[in-house]
Amino acid sequence: ETGVTQSPTHLIKTRGQQVTLRCSSQSGHNTVSWYQQALGQGPQFIFQYYREEENGRGNFPPRFSGLQFPNYSSELNVNALELDDSALYLCASSQGTSGSTDTQYFGPGTRLTVL
Amino acid sequence: QKEVEQDPGPLSVPEGAIVSLNCTYSNSAFQYFMWYRQYSRKGPELLMYTYSSGNKEDGRFTAQVDKSSKYISLFIRDSQPSDSATYLCAMRVNFGNEKLTFGTGTRLTIIP
Image 1 (spheres, each protein chain N blue to C red):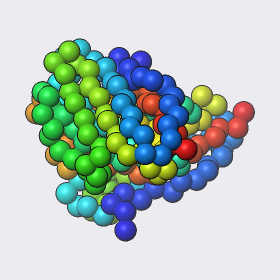
Image 2 (tube, rainbow over the protein chains, first blue to last red):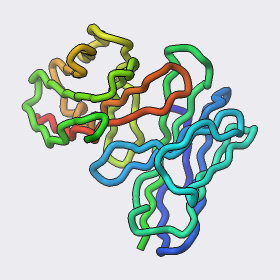
Image 3 (cartoon, rainbow over the protein chains, first blue to last red):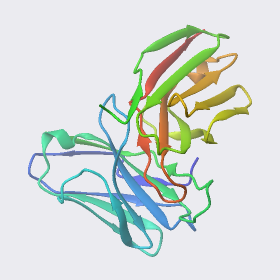
């Protein structure tokens, strides 16, 4: 187990709705990254937060937003859901140091289905 | 063209066989290379982590990086049914907080 938890496990929404996904990182991990994994694809980087500030963003529209809190929890918010947003959403935590061996530990993911 | 290419499989081999999984990449700036294993309905689990060219061995797993050819491999010796999973290669440019760029994953089944 990586010590990274995500909730909920599964979620069904309809097109146009808004959704909030939650992640709890390992204690002491200052960095959280969010990825979207479509069926049969590898994870795609959405964005990353370091000490509550956005620290990099992938090729995703502004309706994907996030928050990171001091207690090592974080959120991914998606507005105006589209059918193509159906995917497994993964969060990954890391220590956020400059060490070359810093690695990202993934949670089990939240499977989002948009109808 | 994707930055990281990986044969999606599926790949089926008999128990005990040697498995070879491969990825190619186009971004010569990638320096850190990882292999993740992902079981069905689970998050990716880090298997191997290598820096620059060369081999790294950990038990039945060997990771190989050839930066001149932009090619990485994962070898699994004495494969077991419990190795059945999707294997994802991932890479990044710099150390620290850099985002990971993944391949599409190869689905592997070990037949008892």
